[in-house]
Image (cartoon, rainbow over all chains, first blue to last red; front, side, top):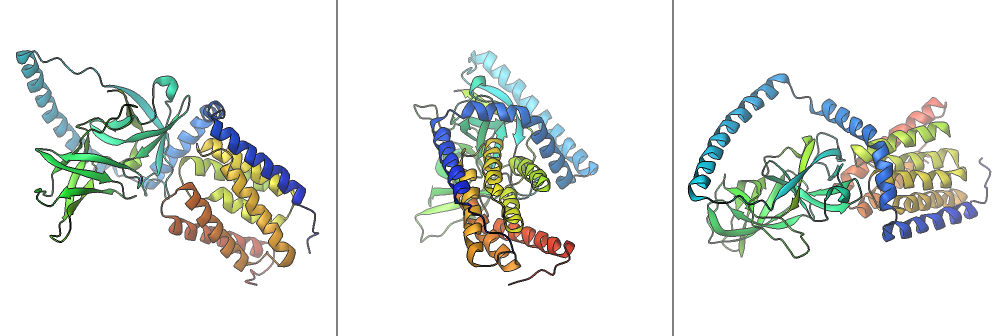
Length: 264
Length: 137
């Protein structure tokens, strides 16, 4: 039988300290401490993250080679489009929009239920407000939207993914600019494009882009960032709106480098 | 105690970088049931603090939760025997569920079930390794 000691004084001391910590956390004083702590430990965390992802994903060389070939073809098409675009710009002397610049950032943490298999709940990147990252900044890979910054520290930031159930933003369909809806995360790989008018013609394969919902405080996404493609449509005549499932081309489980939109 | 601290270190590293399973909570629960020392309040406090720092969580939240968890365990053990599988299963499930829910995690129920399975198997192994049969009551 264990001897029953009086534990209440111990509890009260540490309970009081915990409350004190919460107050400090709310005041923002601890942000620098968090940043310094994670700067020190991020090599260990990053190595753990890489090791776990490599172990759990188990991609074969054949699959990677096939993916590489596919990407090379896409790159070729895009290069042709860039040349065409440049020629048109030169022809019509259109100046390039320089308001959008990007901050490259390494993903140092991506906790999820099963690493490498389930989607991460959020990302931690190694850039913070010292590097010009702001709360609400959009995060992309290529032209594909990943998510937005929800918390910044001096040297780190936390990113909420577009697949997160708290994520919600306006979107439009490529080639059908008048068709608008709201993209909502579902905690899985499929997002929902909701609030689309019944009269709108949606079809599988339609590409979805951000509509642009920037506010005065710089929060919100800029327009024309790729969100994904429609994979299924739910349309009932008895409903007010129709819905569609949208899947992003980005592999959120396998992100190593992302880009934060600096200003737009 | 050294084993507990080492386990908490590994769990914090995993929980801060690759998984959302409440591994630190499970270790504190396990250690509190088995060791029943007042030092567990200090361990719970510092483990929670380091976890919050490493995972960019709300500072103080995990410390508060873990400290309260240890208190509830010690209050419960004043009246009832706690070193049994029933207690471990119920407390780990409810504790994980509440912790993950308050953290805003996804798949809360499924993660709690997995957490309960992990700690139950660990407890059964611990009892077996110490020459005791795992009791349900």
